[in-house]
Image 1 (cartoon, helix red, strand yellow):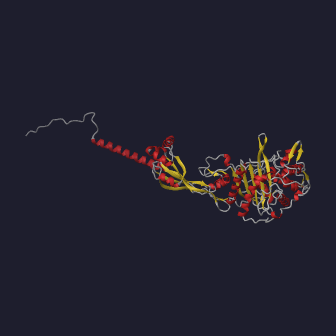
Image 2: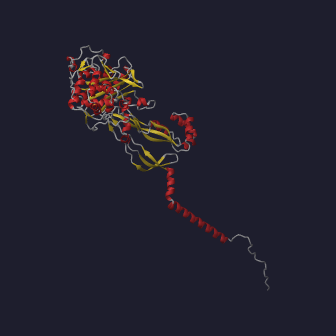
Length: 602
C-alpha cells in the first residue's frame, strides 16, 4: 500500500502583518497597567501631595466667611429713658450674573424694590463682573422677607441694625447720628463710637451656587455687642429747653439760638438745645448748618455777661468791694484814647454792684483800667475762657481770648464789657456754674456720674459776693427784671447784648442777645445760658429776648427736680434791697424794651 504525501506548502507569516494575538494582549495589559499606575499616582497627588491646594480651591467656591451683625449699645438719659436704640433690619443683596441669567424675573424684583426695571437691569449689567451688590439697605424685616419669599435666583438677605432716636430733633445735636453702616458720624455717637459700636463676629458657612447658606461650619470670631451708656441729659428738661428756644426764635424772628443747662456742683450737662435743627432719623435733606451743635462750635462776643468776671478780678485785687468805691459814669459816655464807650442811659454814680445791676459799660471799663492786666487776663483764663472746656465733644471750639501782654488800653476796656473776645454758650454756662459752685470750675460732662476734677477759679468768699451782686440783676430795677424772674425762687444772673461782627467791623442792626443765670441764688443748683443770634424785632436786648426763655426753662426744671423754693413771697414784699445803687442818680426805670445797656459798639 502506498501512501501519498501532501506537498502543499504551509502558508508562512508575511512581512508587514501585525503582532500576534498574544502580543496584542500583552500590549493592552501593559497600557492598562500604566493607566492604573497613573491614576493611582494622580490620586495620591490630589489626596496627599496637593490636598490643601485643591481643598482651598473648593472652599473658595462654596465656603464663605460672613459677618455676624451686632447691636449698637443703647444711649439712655440720666433717668433710664432711651435716647438712641438699635432696631433689626434687613438688607437685600444680589449676585448680578445669576440675576441676569433669570432676566425675566427682573421686572418682578424691581417692583418689589420700588425701582424701575430698566434702571435695575442697567445697574446689574454694570456690575456683572462681581458676585455681590446691595439692592437696598435697611428694609423693615417683614418687607425684606416678602422679597426673599419670591425666591428669585441670586437675590439674598443680610441682617443688620439701624439706629432710631425716639426724641427726634429734640436731642439731635447732642446725640448726632450714625451712617448706613451704623458708625457714629457726629455728636456723642461719634465721641463714644468705639464704646457703643461693639465688634461684629464672623462665621464660616457653606453656600450653594444660588448663594443660599447650606450649613454653618464654624464660628470664627465671637460677636461682642455694643455697650450701653447713660448720659447726664434729662430728657424732660431737654424738651423744655428745646420748646422754649423754638418759641423764642419764632417770637423774635431770630436766625439761630442755643440753650445750655448745667448742674452747678457736678458740671453735668442736663440739657443742650440748638436751632436750626434736623431729624436724626432722616438725615437726608439736612445741611451742615442744621446739624452743627452751636452751643459747642459757635463763638460769640459775650457782651455784658463777661462783666461778672471783670468784677471778680476787681474784688480779687482788694481795691473794690461790692459797695465801694463809687464810680462816676456820667454823662453815660467816656472817651478813652479818642474812642467813646457808651451806656444807654446816664446812670450817674454807681457802686461796683450797681455796675452789674445796671450793666454799665462805662463803669466796667473804668474798673478794668485800674486793674493789673495780668490779673484781669488770668481771671478770665481761670474761668475757662480761651480754652476748650474739656467736655470731649467732637468739634468743640476753644473760643478766643487774646494774650494779656498784647492788650492796648482800648482793647483792655472793651474786653471788660464783652468785646474783643469770643466764647461758646457752653463756656459761658460753665464759667457761671463755677461762680455758683463756690469758685470751683469743673469740666462739663455728658456722662452721668463722670468724675470731673475741680479747679479753684476764685475764692468761695468772692464767689459768694458775686452771686449776691448778680442777684440784683433780676431784682426790680435790674436789666433782667422782670423777664428772667422765676416765681418763688431767687435768681442770680446777667444779661448781655452784643453787636454781631462782620467783615467791616460790626453790624449796626445785628445783635446777639444773652442771659446766663443760676437758681436758687441762695444755694445755686442749676445754671442756664441762653444765646439768641440775630433777633429781628424792635426788642433785641438780652434781658427781654433771652431772659424769658431762661425763666421758662428754669420754672420747669426746678419742678421736675423737686428743688425747694427759697423766695416765697419775697417779691410781694417789695423785693431785695438795691444796696448796689448807693449814690446812684435818681431816674425812672427804663422801658421794658430798653432795660439793658449792653449794646454799645466798641
